Length: 165
Image (cartoon, rainbow, N blue to C red; front, side):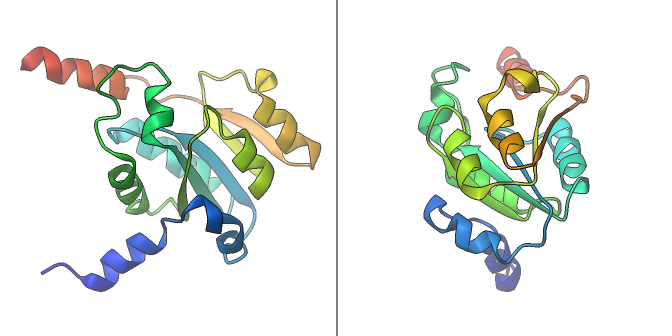
């Protein structure tokens, strides 16, 4: 039988957008913020999230809702895992402190609302070109890109699985 306390602890890390600000007051600073679909969690994701967490005392992960993820153009059947399942898996990671969602194309509004100390994105982003960077820097925060772990991609993994079918 599963340990109900552990399941409760995982669920407690998942927070609706309407309660995020109140929940953040319970977390130690500096607060690191990152976002993404995190559809099929792989080693690259886990390493990225661990590196992000190491930059601060808490890590807030904002997941694209299913609708937001579909608008990214990764394919009509993506995400493979629904937003509730992706949040639960993300909550199981030691590196994550709080998980929420955003339904917009970018988390700009959420970032302006929570005011993280550090914004982290993957290495494929030019941080100077992001509106999110300007918002974070406007109140004294930092924005940086972490390098990708070569050889890991959800899109490549899904393609590999489909080829074997």
